Length: 242
Image 1 (cartoon, one colour):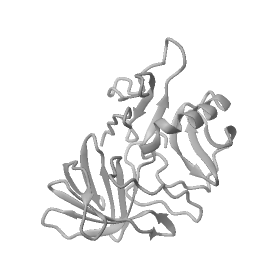
Image 2 (tube, helix red, strand yellow; image 1 turned 90 degrees about the vertical axis):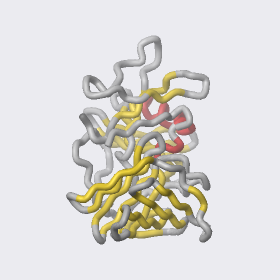
Image 3 (cartoon, one colour; image 1 turned 120 degrees about the vertical axis):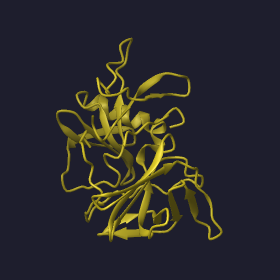
Image 4 (cartoon, helix red, strand yellow; image 1 turned 45 degrees about the vertical axis):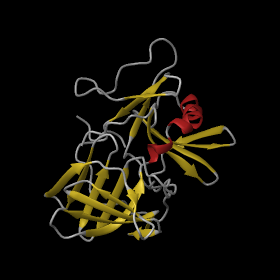
């Protein structure tokens, strides 16, 4: 599914993203969602294995196992009587409870129930995709790119141990930690599995009159990300590749 983002309000590229949730003893938990849940939502489960992607600018796709796939039109989640949220996407419904949820030792901020039209429901966990706070994280992202200029592809940015963790990629993969405005870069820690890493990929534009090429290349046109004043910040690449 092509991820299309309007990032003014708002991983390495790989074909065939796995539907299985990550497993790790050390995970950065996604931040608690805002009440309106405007950003993209990812749901996962392991019995059976399933994955749901709900994109505010596109569709809702639920994949169960290797062969079952259901899709519907995105609809903004609304409050349910039990205090959670419900999304009715036509062929797919998603119910969310704002409470801790765990799969395979991985902590998630939401409990989820997804149901295809006239099919059995599947249960699991969910989280809001990391790029919900992309524009507000630009100072930390820029600090990291200044410390590692060759890596301009951001696969994750979010809170970590009192600061901010920014994962960058290009020919190399690095972890950048920003504390009190200072960026420290090191080779990517293969043992650190970050919740949501690679679900969205932001490519930072270069400073100056030439921002660089659109990362979509000949495959597609990557959506632009702009600041509130219209300044081009970069583009959202497609995690699925061409």
